[in-house]
Image 1 (cartoon, one colour):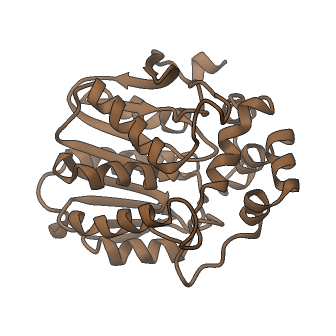
Image 2 (cartoon, helix red, strand yellow):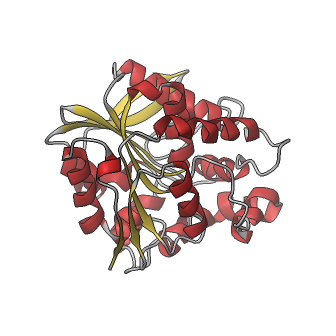
Length: 304
């Protein structure tokens, strides 16, 4: 069933002894799609199918996610800087160094924009989908469910013992209609044991909230780096019913990247490419086909 839903060639890069899975479909200017937690490259399947006729679509699975290896802590440090390093290593391996359209979702925003901050000259366009590349907005409370997973033994048991994070996300992450059972199974299937759920938990535990937290300064630096992209054509598609990346995060993006075309979807949740694929994929396709500065194309629309 997975091969039918996800009909792409599997590619692997040996990354410090770990098999780092990625898609590499099509030819043309590169579109690099970076997923978050608790998803994997499967999230971008419709976008890859739509764009690969005219673009080279590169979609990695972070170590610990999807079809990549899932090592224990002894063999891999599950932290933001390593995620960025992994992405950089993959793009160097593929000789991708210019005209990159970066598509980011969830933790992919921090990872993708972390890479972009290192090489702003390589980024041609940005597509932002319910994500962040900055600290928790001051107007936003840290969600209690994430606090539980991040800080408690109970959270560890729920996430690693019962796959609570991935499973629950497959229900609450969509709002227009429930995921089909086979799609939901595809989302959660890589995280099928205590061992294979390590990244799901470590992502949450790696969220920096205070100055003494690991990666707090790195996130501050990534946020400061967003000023390098105020002239970069940017498309934002946002599900307003996301319980984490909500209107408070969207407001921050508008401040950081005021030139962006913004499309809000009142009835969509975190997995915007599931809830509104039929609308968002064409928006992205048209955005990639457009030329000129997004300052001349700026719009703010709400989906139905």
